[in-house]
Image 1 (cartoon, rainbow, N blue to C red):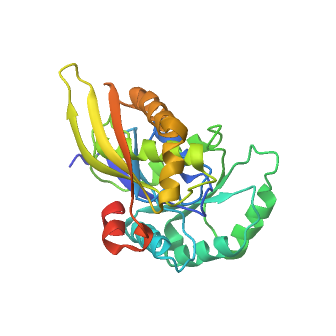
Image 2 (spheres, rainbow, N blue to C red):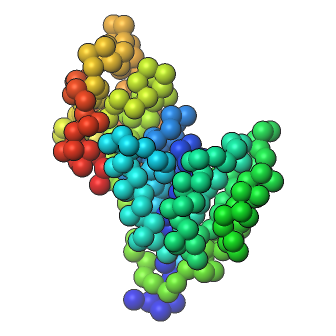
Image 3 (cartoon, rainbow, N blue to C red):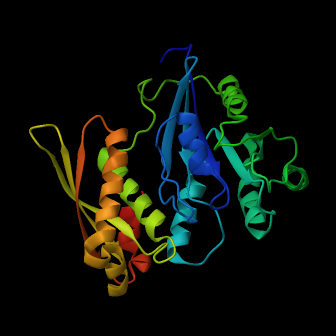
Length: 294
């Protein structure tokens, strides 16, 4: 290990739709995590990597922490809490637009035992409805003597100062990833996530949480094109019809939008072969949940 290098793992927590994924994508300068207006979009611990000044920061975008008895949400909570325990820092992103309530109180309760490694980022300060003072008062009531940064992840305001703090305080350690890498996700996982994002954006009202993308196979053609085959899995026959759309127009739109973005992310073309199948009550199936959320 080079004694001149430093590294830190930073678990990002916050209520659903606080801007965690937007922050990771912004500071890593690449599409690491999918972003949608649907809460609980993130289902895995997504890693984004920043390497600067002989220091590597590994950001772990955790599923949104909130209290729920649903099996899917319990699994998401388990993933998030494990990342808190394993991290060097906890970055708590609080939404300046929404008034802190039960969800924020629940999150604070989870991170209080690790208070010494907590950093707070008040996000969305650029929004016309932002109330930074309200967020500051909430933090002052529950978290004492923690670093606080006011940021806009969307506009990249205040993020440099936050990154510099993490670099300065990162412990000595190796660079775990090549310096030009901004995520450790496998291509097939990233493809499935982009497809899921396009489903959310096109059908957020119809099937917000009833869908996942199941990998089947992939291969490279002679011209270098990656051909990915997968299933869009829903819970009911009626949802299958919604995803396919009239004359297959919706699934075609999802495929075309996905291929367009994937052509920017990857250095080679990507062609998608997507089918839709029904798996009743998959959100209550332990085997499926374990396979999806690792």
